[in-house]
Length: 450
Ligand code: NDP
Image (cartoon, rainbow, N blue to C red):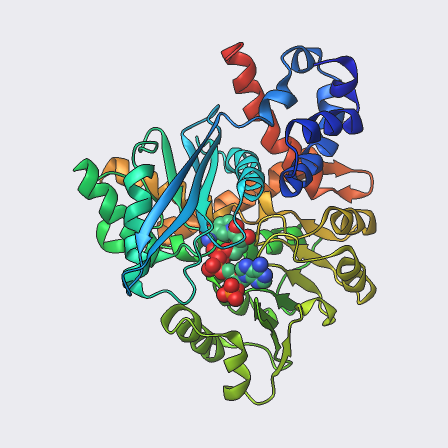
């Protein structure tokens, strides 16, 4: 690495952008990490000599393939799919599969890159990867989704394995999709092994896996408040999304005594000033997990709530914002509005939900800002537990997994404090980035030039 690119964020980024044109999400994710770790790298000559940042921002490999499948009407469809195997310095690649029309190489590279640091933060031996397809499961029949998953796995199975690469779910990939994918893997390989996580409990899945990302995010937020001698209990919270992460963040929030006043989907958000209680959440679960309906139906049932079509929930004054839908769902303007309305904490359930300028505004304001790679690591941590259970051929109790999840989120929080504490308090962005980086960098250095 030349002197400049080892010492100067802009010089490094201009090289990266030149090497990876047209990939704005990837540029954004790298910039956020490099801003934090550059001062750390600058002080260590061996990192510069080993070109650690340039190597870390280059995926080990990307597999791209066509997935051909048939609709119920007998029409042929072809989608594109990817598996980005980003970095396996500290363990087999690990990271979800996303099915959404917006999926492209930039999105999957940003997710795989982030995943590398997140997995390192968990303390478990997992490398970083991500994959998915521009297939849209919305509006498809179960049988169409099954045919797509089977066709996708027919290629993907060559590239994954319990010691190589272990995918899981993400947006658009839940228990139904994981089951179809795993069924096909098993048929092709004739092996029952922990090659996917998020499996059903009947065939090697872990207790608390489906809840883990949302629960973990609330635990992380509670830890951040705890570090300031405060609690999440009694706080008003805006959650976005109504999928896997959002639903279980709300569930844990209710349990911890927070008042959750919003949820959303890509159509708009609902605002329930009375708070979403357990009964209302059961309705949302049935709506989203059972019938795959829209969140707007909430206001037909609960008359005090309002629906705001085409809007996001960040204009509602709250103590805590918890984005749990997708990337870049908090714009710089929305970040400033949250701050103006007195937000005390932003805790990210989704991956990179805040645009970079908004993230800077949260850090500068000194609020509790838990970035995704720390705050939403609970999902992959319990996936790691699922791999261990599969290897042991045992199933852990709900209590044991939940204890492990709580411990992991506390440890991640403490690592952020260790690497992010300064005279103005804890910078969790810096803490998560440097804390995740160090272990991967040390492993890469130890391997030499590979
Ligand atoms: P789901 O598919 O279960 O739910 C996604 C939710 O977000 C839905 O309510 C969806 O609305 C909404 N959403 C998705 N895309 C958009 C968009 N472009 N604009 C507005 N709303 C959108 O996904 P998950 O809950 O699993 O994932 C949510 C986020 O959490 C993602 O960023 C994911 O990467 C991250 N994450 C997930 C983990 C997991 O364990 N599942 C682990 C760590 C991070 P609609 O139904 O209308 O599309």
